[in-house]
Image 1 (cartoon, rainbow, N blue to C red):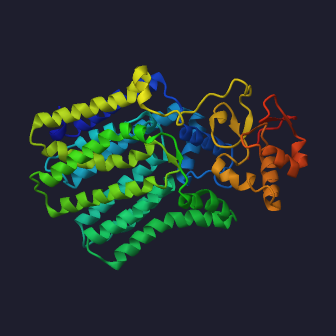
Image 2 (tube, rainbow, N blue to C red):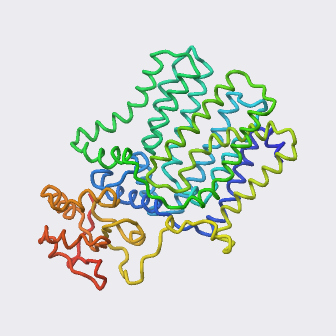
Image 3 (cartoon, rainbow, N blue to C red):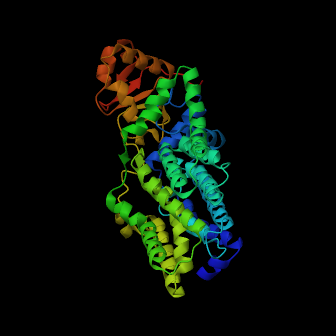
Length: 476
């Protein structure tokens, strides 16, 4: 099997896609639990579809191009988790084929192999939260295009026409997922150490990277909303605030195949009988720098969940192919491959089809929970003051305060006259029918804004407030 994949033509890409579908299809049929970040993306897409702009009228740190994609999906499919999963599966297929083809075109392996496509598909299916259409997966598309441009540049040191494209594609990846902005350092160091040094080259790289971001910032500045994008997107990146959804043990169990394959590849490349030309060695060094940049990006992730490790899939597939193509004992390579495949399969179906093994993964905080029974409201325009999105699953978000770590800037500063005016205007623009107060902030809010307090009354739960009179749906 492995021999066929190592020497097969483009047909082996279809084999890679077959494995991807076979692993994912049972869980798609079974139905996957919704995860907290996924619900957040669905809510943002829905809110943007209703006409509320990101950052100004929807407070969240999601990157703008990802928000645009989620809005488009909501227009086409509504609040559909299945749409996210199906689109994500096709995107992994496209990425794996593109990745494998440009590696083959650059002749980075001794054999013309499409094994990277298979390893990409397998490593891109490590856990069920890899299945969704995350900003990491969306941004990874442009990282791969930038990597292809970087390899082309390393092959043609005397020409700088690809350098602008490298910066541009990395900038587009950043506009999908802001921690990917650190990859500009990866590109800068790679060009500095692995190609001819020319000032024009680095100016082109910097210009290509800053142009799309500058256009975005300028557009917000021209409509006098620069503060909104600064506080909700740029400043959050530097604050390094992450919501941790799983413990270290769970991460270790899920990510073992990636780590083991990297170690095996390193042992083969360092200790084996390698015969690579200078260009191949430089590309290997560039992929090692990708690993370092990916590691740095993890520290700036908003949500620390397994899916953020998708950024390691390309280098693992890249180096893993060297291991399987260079291992001297063919049976050992076959054994490692099938063990990896079985482990990934169990990592996916074990939690849902083998209840006893489900205790291996501590993902309780990752999964969206059902509303408590005493919260007898559904399809209501809702504001949650506090951490967590569970209550929004069966309701519609109201006011810009979707993300608590950003909303705190207002709700924990109610002694400020300017803040009170802003809060009041946000309530007038998009009034909630129900308020769930997890931090006992509403009494202070209504004390500062008695006119607003008259519109609401307490429910049977002391932390829940209901609007006395119905409101029309707020759509721009």
